[in-house]
Amino acid sequence: MTVAIEMGQTTAGAPAAMDLEELLATRLLVQGNSGSGKSHLLRRLLEQSAPWVQQAIIDPEGDFVTLAERFGHLVIEAEDHTERGLQVAGERARLHRVSTVLNLEGLDAENQMRRAAAFLGGLFDVNRDHWYPMLVVVDEAQLFAPAVAGEVSDEARKLSLGAMTNLMCRGRKRGLAGIIATQRLAKLAKNVAAEASNFLMGRTFLDIDMARAADLLGMERRQAEAFRDLERGQFMALGPALSRRPLRLHIGPTDTQPRNSTPRLMPLPEALEDMRAVILAAPPPDASRPQRRPAPDLLEQLRAAKTAAVPEIRPDVVEVVVSAEQLAERRERVDRTLRAVLAEPDAGFRAVGVLYQEFVVRCRIEGLGSAVPDLNEFRRMLTHARAGLGADIAGDDAWQDVSLRASILPDDMQGVFMMIARAAKEGWPCPGDAAIARAYGSHSLRRAQRLLGYMEEQGLIVVQLDGGGRRIVTLVELAWATAPGDPNGDDLPAEQVARAASA
Image (cartoon, rainbow, N blue to C red; front, side, top):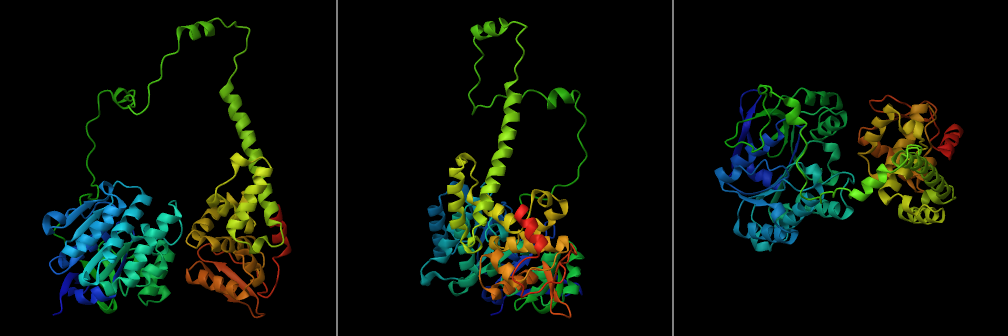
């Protein structure tokens, strides 16, 4: 028996139906900027399918807990349970076929990732006898399957990304149908997004996200502008469970409402009689901090006994000046140490971890033990150094856009992108394959060519060849373009080498 759930209406006024059995076999990806109606779409889908299939919702903001009153979902407050407890809860939910909402509200990003991974692991690892069909909805999926490392630990990111990859890549045979929703396709890990066969794309404004959405729907790049024109609650649909051709539809109403509704405009209250006294009143004492004891009378007497001839000393001001000078000196010494490490002949081909160990040793020899950057900061410094960036250009407003675009790439590719961006900004010839490979830490010229191809796929650059076979790279949106350069050339342009050496 085919079960069709009604999602809303097409622009022609016809019902927009989704084949639930096909959805269970092919998975779904939902994308839309904040305010596009993405959460409303998920709620409509969950409400319409609740009588037919078991559900599990990974809810980072507590938006879906209201499903419990209407449809009987079990709400699990993640902050009240350990990771092991949530893994067991996931296993038991599948065994007893209970629909659940994992409420991650109140947890920081790392603990959200760890607890979501544990719960998803429990759903995934049950015995074959209990592989019943189940919809697993993950809202704000870019938090749990980020494309690049963020502020959380590598361990938490690997746990969460592994659980999401299992859900989307291996979950189908276990009856798990992943439905992932994200605000930014560019921030979502590609191996997770690529497993979906059904797509609902809502309003989005960034060119990178529009280009990826158009590619997934099989639309031409020039048609990607249509995503800016979508209204709230309108989505472009494509997939075996939805439509064989891109179809615009409007999501229908829901029976339940989110607990955290969108704030509405309301008139301001009447002005307080004494606003200054109310707003700027002394704060209550912080119970978590011990109260400062008043100074002894003897100390006050000694201070009063100082003669007027003794000039007042401001130790706080002196300390700040000295600290600033010391900080600048230490920063210069750290930069000089990094340049010494990179000056070694094979530095471009050594692993980051090996370079960091040598950097730490040199810093200790220089007496900089307390000022040694951690590994993440070292990676950032290394990226800028390999790109030949100095403080002058790194602080440029236009360069901030370059750094933002580079952040969607893996860490080891960002230095290459910045090197090319520097050449484009200055109008230097495009670096050759050998120079690109060296900046990436490889001897392979093919890998350098693949790097450029990957960046072009991400919508960051456009690569062209002139009539003489020389390569020109243009940065999308910024419209910076390198001068023609020989792809087979071995070194960077002389002026770029000089700038990089002095950076």
